[in-house]
Image 1 (cartoon, rainbow, N blue to C red):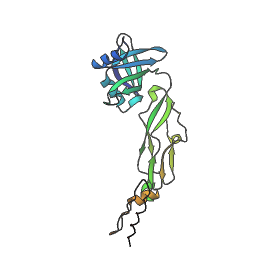
Image 2: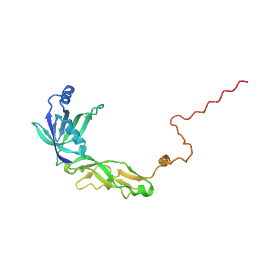
Image 3: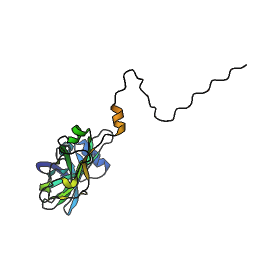
Image 4: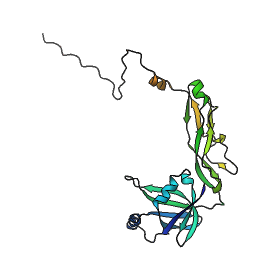
Length: 223
């Protein structure tokens, strides 16, 4: 989704671990921008700006302007990032230039709306199988998400990727038969788990792991 957000960046002349460490100590993170038939450029950007985009409603589908000092201003998307495995800090980000006139492939979230009738009338469950579908469209047509209405669904019913109304100029890339959500019966084990024990009855404890061994026989008394 196209936004008016502008992220400032500067070209990094030095490479290597020491240069990356100095970049982070200065309050920035290393980045690289590539694509649109142009050479890759090593950059330094604000981690706060990038995290703000990644954590926004549009996430990785956000198209924003990257303003590289003394070089160019170009629309880009975040395509990959690296985090510190211990502290969770953002360490590096890959950005891709976007040609706004060309079709691109993106994954779009799918959310459900309503409560399936099968839940109330048949004691069934609504199971969400797929939360994203892949589509192809021009950048300006990328939706925030797709909403699937499950209100009329009964036991055995399902919603598939082919049931989603994509919009003009949008092509479905995910398999059409991909199940988004379906209404299923409650398994016997799940029913047993919620059944309350009879008053006064001792609950049965099932142990996991090895089978219970037989109790050792009492030693024979000496005559």
